[in-house]
Length: 74
Image 1 (spheres, rainbow, N blue to C red):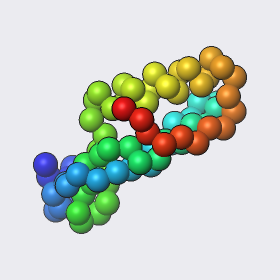
Image 2: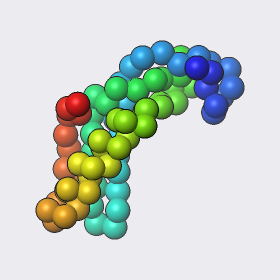
Image 3: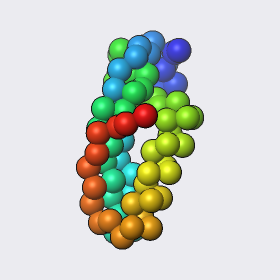
């Protein structure tokens, strides 16, 4: 796919670090599968992966976590 940010590069499979924050809660996911622009480095996570990340994040919020760093697990 063509990058919507730089409009120059094309994306290729790679990984990303995704940080989700809400008020006092921060959850960092490492090694998340993503499409990464070869030119500018912009990262795109698909809808299914994003939904999984949000579900885990919501569990962390409910559990009272303040900061959590995880490796992505499908």
